Every structure is written in C-alpha cells, then in structure tokens.
Image 1 (cartoon, rainbow, N blue to C red):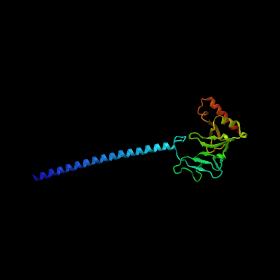
Image 2 (cartoon, helix red, strand yellow):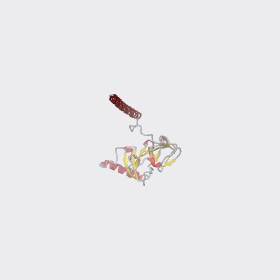
Image 3 (cartoon, rainbow, N blue to C red):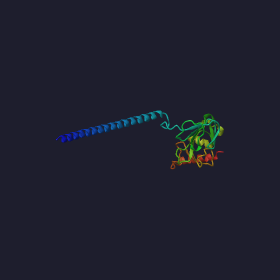
Image 4 (cartoon, one colour):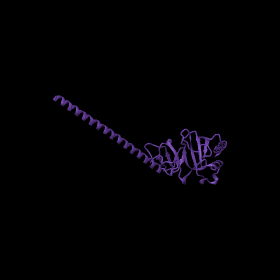
Length: 225
C-alpha cells in the first residue's frame, strides 16, 4: 500500500512538472512571437523614416531623388579626354563605383566616363558651337552621347547652317557614333543625329517632319569645315 502511494505521488509530481514545462514553453513562444512582431514593426518604421528623409532630401532635384554620389574628378590642367582637349577646371563624372564616391584625387578609367562638364569661362567648341556639357547616352544599347550647346557664347562669325538649325529647335543634340570612346567632333565617327531636343527624335520614324529635320541637320553637320 505504501508503495502505491509513493507511485501516485511520483506520478502527480511528474504531471505538475510536465505542466509547468509546457506552460513555460508556451509563454516563451509567446514572448518570442511578441519580440519578433515588435522588431518587425521597428524595422518597418525605420524603413519608412528613411524613405521620407530620402524624399525630402531629393526635393528640388530634377531627377526626383537624391541619387548616388557619383565619383568625379576636376582637371587641374588641360587634359585629353575622349579625344577632346578639355581645359583646367573641367568636371569629369564617372559611373557609380562601389568603393569611390564624390570628388577624386586622380583620373579614373576613361571607359567609365559618363559626363564632361566644361567650366563656363572655358567652353569647348564642338562643330564650331560652344558646348557646356557632353553626356553619354543612358541607354546602354545606344552608342552615342548628347551635346549641350551654349548659344549665348556663339559669336556671329561662327554661325553656320548647322548651328542655325541646331539652335532653331533646342540646345540638346543627340549624336550616334561608331566608336563610343571618341566624343570629339569627328565626322568620320559620327553616324547620325539621333535627336534635337524632345521635338525631333529618330524614334518617331512615322513623323516625316521630324525625320526630315534630322536629315537636314545631319547633312549640315557633315558640311561643317
């Protein structure tokens, strides 16, 4: 009889212990679940704050966002870049780089160049027209660049049919080339005028007016001495 009582007590103890363990495990699971939910909420709040801050910091940027801090170099002397002798003070902007951003102390790989911005006091002539900037086409499937003219610096003695046609539409001129490493006014390398502003695009092939204008502009370009 005594032995049976001991067994009953032992079973009751095991039952109580098992119940405590189960309750403790359940509470721990609930605790972990609550912690997980709390961390998820915190992460979402942080992401939301970053998105808002990024949007605010990008206000006034024409691209609608702050964008990467692309690496760039300011030339300290006349330098040959993309077959163009650029003056001192020219800003050379390169593709986004994992290890480099902002102003650099030395020239980077010219193949990674995306933009040349000339100093206002030392504009370079391209096809007889003073230009402030040359930007590589964003679309990697296209071989060419956009030239930005500054017609305020075009003197009367430099006016040509080419400059007149260009100025009549826009200051932006899209150029197709064979060798993308040559951004100079090399007529042998230039294969076509891709665009002149937003109103004249080769893309709109169904527009005879646009195509005719670009044809005439390309012909005038080829006639520049």
